[in-house]
Length: 368
Ligand SMILES: C[S@@+](CC[C@H](N)C(=O)[O-])C[C@H]1O[C@@H](n2cnc3c(N)ncnc32)[C@H](O)[C@@H]1O
Image (cartoon, rainbow, N blue to C red; front, side, top):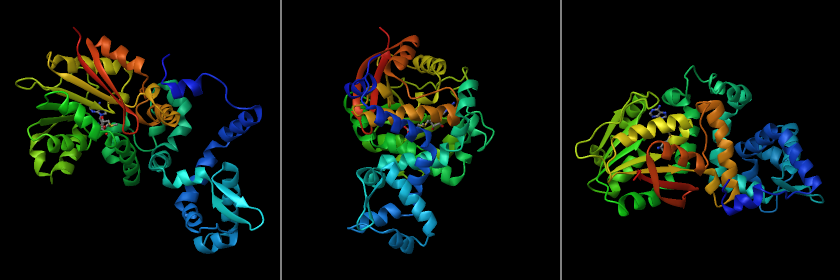
């Protein structure tokens, strides 16, 4: 198995002493409440108050400022010491932030992940085991009876939608500026299919970046409706079309365009499907490709991360796909996607790594 160096260093040998390993085992055993304590410390503003205090705060001061009970604050502060997000001065009995506490407040990725896990995943993960056994998102049922989360996206409760979109956009938005350079500067792109284009964010960036390109967003019909509403106010949106289709339906073909299509763009899209489904989608993409067409697959491939925490987030995200999203997809390893690409009669021409929060772009063309 090929891994980028930071992952090879971490995942191939033991780094912990026996004591550290035992502590980590307990950290895992108490994982759900570790998460909840940290989340509440953020939500109630206790971490912010402590950060802004300069010399730290006492229990009494925090009780007064938050107007929560002494019991509640005491439980949270003591647990926060053990979790490692606070430090205490034993003489003055003042609490200050640890480095980890600082990251909880300031790292945007961590904040997005906390909201995503609380609002979208937390209850569903209770059903992870059944989901893995059945290959179905059993954890989705408390939101609705859809077979995948994508069918229900437009109907999810408002807060759940907010956290879902914030998670999705956080990762892809950061990569769009570099991706535009790759799609429009390296190749002549006058027409582009944005497959799984969601709210039309990338499509809008394309029509602003290139004054001639015509974009067609392919997505589920209900998503296309949402997308159209979102892009409507933008004058350049007249060069964006929507095409509603269910790509899980093997008979659902990509639209044919007179003169062919220069680019097919799939960003954070193929991770929504099993490997067999990916092959089927790529085979249908291939039908509308010519020798000039390039297929750009932008994914967060877990093995290609320069920093291990990013790989950690991705292998955990796979379990959102298992329990909530569809029960059969994941954040893939490069080898998995290459296998699908090859089976669909395509080949990888070039790979760009390290975009935004850890995206890679696989540029593919028809197999010679
Ligand atoms: C994770 S989002 C990616 C959004 C966007 N491309 C980005 O990079 O942020 C996946 C998209 O695929 C769409 N999708 C999922 N299943 C689909 C299906 N069976 N047919 C068509 N589109 C689908 C979803 O509606 C959603 O817009």
